[in-house]
Length: 628
Figure 1: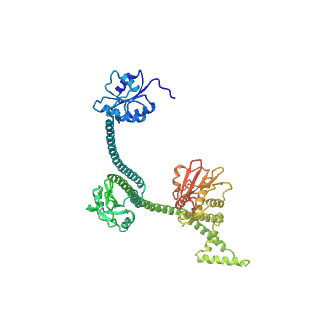
Figure 2: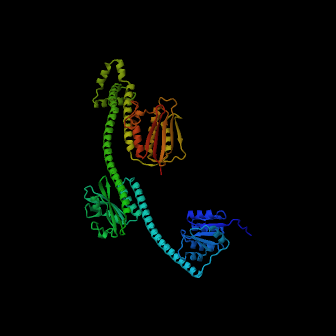
Figure 3: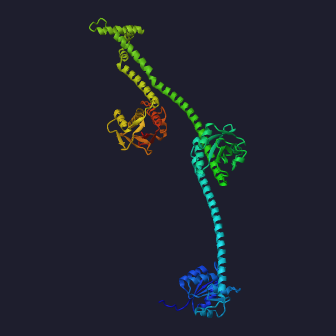
């Protein structure tokens, strides 16, 4: 059994702060006054608190007091409800009682308000004459209001449906515009990185049609004479057919392409059937809408971009704005590609000219160098020839009557005959020798002198041959194949005859084979190791360190040759690669070793670099392609 509350609770639902304050002041001494400013909040509070009496203002937002009384009566059938209203029009009291209220208190509230509340709490119920009539009137009022609410709700639904459709169209437009702008930005970003003109144009028309779902796209570029717009890229089969026929349009106002180039303005035909300036293209029979967007860079029209659709009115203002922005980016990319082509052509011409100059310079230097190396040979040969005549004269003086050696007698006779045939008078030479002093005669017939002259001639010839090898070696026909640089370099070092322990190797376990010409690559490392050894002539405990591994770029093998010598001065590090530059003076260097090394490595698609500091040795790094 529930315990009765000591102090009754009264719920007052009223949207006026002043009215609630007045009621609170009149009733607070005897009752617990609960308040709600909104009927919906009042309904919830009534359900939660189960008050002893509910006071309702008749004029409430969202619903009338009568409607609220009906709802409350259903929720709390045993709780008395009293309507308080300033509306004194006929029938208001009766409709309130018909709605379920037990009483009706008119505003303004009288001094006996608290007594009236006591009476209703104690069971007072006002009577209603002709209740059935007023109940029917109240129900009719509810029906009419419900119908009005339904109509209002229906109108609201229709409006919301219309707004939803508008929002959907707006969202679709915004989504399409976002996609257009996003694609335009992506195309603009990507095309500016493509420097091959043909690839750039083909990529542009393909992505426009695939991303925007257009029927066709093509790019025309203005010919050098400025009179024709020549198709350079077209989408799908129609584009390929037009390219095969060298499709072009005159730059005039008879076509949208020509007109857009002349006026440097976008040309748009939302219904091509009524567009007189549009060229009727037999390759594109399904075109219904078309745009021609000029490709402009620095106030110069490079050409025009055509975009075509098989739908009428296919282009919106957003399409035009986005595609024109993309066309501007494409124009910049086309201009960059054309400038790059011109730059490459100019560079090729400069390289060709410089190559001829270099060849002429190198040829002159080679002739000068060979001349210097060949200069000692004639003098040495002349001295040997003179010495040989004296030896022949001495040989011819042998006695022919010496019968102990018939072969010797025959040889002396042969010497005499060949000397006469060569117009050499051996008797005269002997007479000259007889008149010479002994020391002079010994100098003339010195074997050591002859051998010295032969050595001079031999070394000069070897130098000339090494120059030939340095010049011709890199130009030999290559026979590239997979080669183990590790095995090749180890064998090369073994054949060089260097002191044991001079060369130290460090090979990575995963070092791949290189794809090179074995003979030329052997020449590369023979030169590098030979140069390193020669640089160590004044070094205590000379060491050469050779290492190999896969390069940081996995497409290359890296081999380094490092020594602990004096290093290469910074001021000549760039010069060492130049033909005929040498630091060996007269010790036999040709100045072609590193030059030919660089040529060979570069011809293989690799590169060679130098790192050196004074007193810390030098390291050459060679990178050549990996064998696939």
